[in-house]
Length: 222
Image (cartoon, rainbow, N blue to C red; front, top):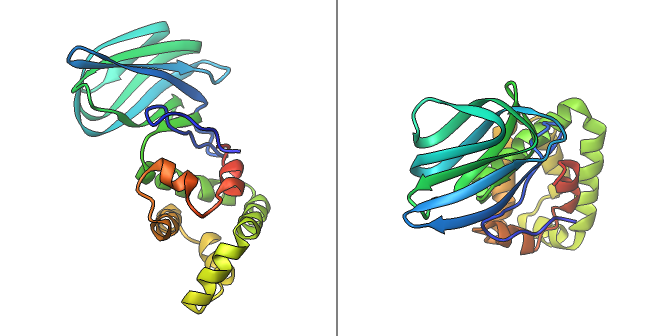
């Protein structure tokens, strides 16, 4: 079952890509700055943190508990990377401006590899992670990927049957060769197409829409 969080503590996506298991517990306005804390719940130390915003922000201050992750580059921008070491259950607290800014993607890193569950807040980022995750599972375990899509089509048989009829094509027959051969960008486009058919514009719309992504999200560790 897909876990629910508030709009500011949105869903994570994981997979054989080993995205980071991680919790973002709160987002509290503090005067003119936003304050967010991120906790390393991976079960092991991490060596980095990657953060993306959809607008330019300035990180005013950062507090590390259980280690230290040094910034790589400037503290104003849209993409930030930090390297060093933070123990399991360690915490990093950020204060940034403007206060209304919200991270669109945050991932713990081990070397150059994301670990655990990422934190993200947009359909676009979900689509990107979905495409990357599908390709990673396809390379590691294509049989598991095929089984998950088989369940996906079973779970949505009625909806997809009507859609197939209206399009004059069998979606499962047409889409699976694409899924099993396309690069991550192609899978991302497939996801965007399905989401577009739902008229979804937010993560909540995706989860509450007419398509049940449960089997696929389960495969990816959501």
